[in-house]
Amino acid sequence: MLQKSLSKKLLTNVLSVYFLLTFIVTLGQVFAEYYNAKDFIRNELTTLQKTFSGSLTRAIWELNTQQTVTIAEGLLAIPSIEGIIVRDDSGEVISQLGRSLDIVNIYSEQLVQDSSMIEDGPSGLFGYTFPLIFEFSGRATQVGDVTLFSSREVVLSRIMISIYFLIGNAFIKTTFLIILFLLAFRRLLTEPLTDLTQQIEDLELEDLEGRKLEIHTTDHNELKIMEISFNNMIDKITDYKVQLETTQKKLLVSNEKLDQQNLILEQEVARKTSTLSQAMMDLQQQKYELEKQKLTLTEEIELRKDTEQELITKHTELQRYTDELNQAQERLVSSEKMAALGGLVAGITHDINTPVGIGVTATSFLHERLIQIESSYKEKTLSPKALEDFINDAMQSTGLLTTNLQRASELVASFKQIAVDQASEAVRTINLKDYLKEIIRSLHPKIKKTKHAINLFCPEDLILNLPAGAISQIFTNLIMNSLIHGLEGVALGEINIKITEQDGLVDIIFEDNGKGVKTEQLTKLFDPFFTTKRDQGGSGLGTHIVFNLVKQTLSGDIDVSSEEGEGLTYHISFPKNMPTPMGIFTE
Image 1 (spheres, one colour):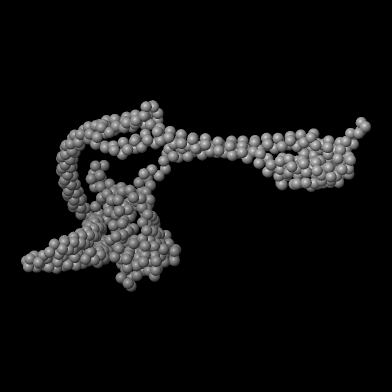
Image 2 (image 1 turned 180 degrees about the horizontal axis):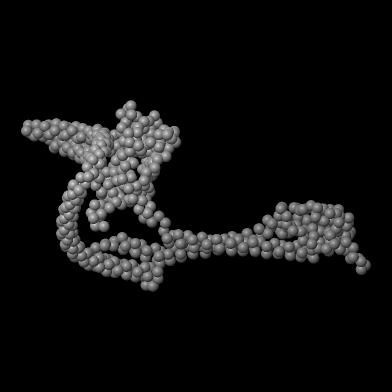
């Protein structure tokens, strides 16, 4: 149901304007009647001067006070007169009857020389003053003056019937106009709009042709135009519906053709991939032949240097010692990597135990419920309610199993990728931010033992093509160094990793708010076997491995800065893309 009728609102606005205009016009007419009546009374007062001035003048001249008072009382009996004041030639009041104003405040004690009007004041009284002139033997002598008073009440009493007539006339016209407007609005607007609304509510989208609007009006007005426009819209919707069905059929045909083309494309890609694999195998074979020829050539050269046998022997011994030293260093580096990997395995095992333990509990509960339902089934005491409870328990248990096994699967997948990368130097494409999140997740067992926070600031779309294992080992060693060395004794530590990329170079700022490093220790930070915790099992190879991975594996640069008590900051940069072995041979 409508809360605000348009016709009612329009009628209210129109009638409000009409009421306002009627009120203003009626008020103007009342004021006009008032001032006309007031002027008429003033004219009456002027006329009374001519009627009674002679008799009053003679009575005062003859000093006949009684006659003067009698004449004044006769004037007061006239309806338009509210009061009268008669004064003699000395300004003394002879007679003061009815309502009047203080004549002394108006004219003082002097007699008026000319006729004048007294305007109405707060009391509503107004009057007319004229002098009394006695002529004798051709001489004119002023014997006094008279002031006649009337009031606003006298004026209103004279126009009261006119006011009632004006108000009644306005009321009758307004009532007639309201009835006329109501009938007109109902016939021309309300009924057609109600009919139009009902037809729109009865409209069915499945049968638009049979539901066109029809407004019962003979005039070509706005409602008729709305009917025509709405019916045109229905025609357009019908046409669009037909076009949409045609387009959908064409789209189905196009999708079938696209599926066929995709199948052909997949077959072509598979064929070219097979050809490329064969070419790579051929290149590997050629590389093996070249290395074999190089070895043969080296042996021939050594055979020709019999005269330098002693020098070669010394050089061989020196090379052997160097190789043994390098092998020992490599074994230590490998041991460091495997130790980190072992810690990673221990931590990830603890995280996996939680979802696996929940899965075992859910499985045991489900097994007990199966035994109960089997027993009820064999004893033929299985009720629908018991079956429904079993199904609900089974759904909850399987849901719990699915959730926790999926969590364990994600942990294993994350650990598997990180572990494989750390054991390999293969070049592959990674999203750096996602990969660093995986590394941080794999170190979660170590991090969660502290209250430290790791903040990662990296672009979402930074894609690298390089040895992922190097990235994993670098950040694993840096984070573990901060946790073990930098943040030792810090209650709420913070590690910030800020990464940007510009002109193909990746720029990394790794910093913590730990205790920092002394200046004399900072120069030895990347030296092998340098550690501040040798008595606590430190190997001194963590930062050395990071330095070699950045410099050699990633072909980048690394700098470190620190002040004691102010934390440690690493600045690392390297190219975002490294050529794969295939790319090297192609070039």
